[in-house]
Length: 159
View 1 (tube, one colour):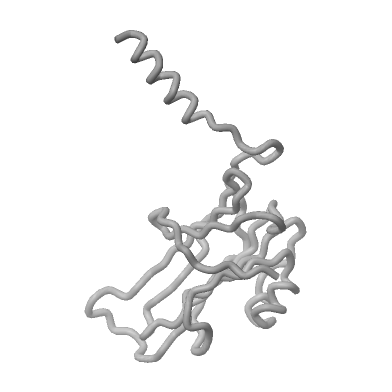
View 2 (view 1 turned 90 degrees about the vertical axis):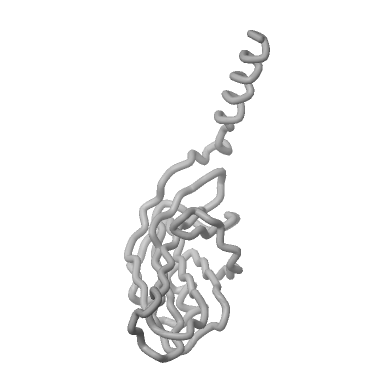
């Protein structure tokens, strides 16, 4: 009995103490200049766009959104496009970002209108953009999650 408890405690300790990759501590990252809005034209399906600079992001999306983000060195520029929605009342925002095991994990806040909510009766295309300071996108997997921590399997396009 005692040996079983000792073995169980050792296994729990080993499972919880998995090391980070060398030189890459797990850490929260600063999200700067986050903005969001709704366009009246855009992509049908969700998409994330990752770039090493404001200029590169602008090359993929057009300069209007990218031009409103602050310039930063050693940063990842991110835009998320939620795709076509049937009305107003939908929004997406970049809530936070973390470096976990070499991956860039970005938490989004997705909102939909509730039942009976009065909204614009037009197709909309919610988007958000932000600068994630302190980490460059090259060679990193980008993982998007919703506000509940569920992984979003949106395609990621790189500049």
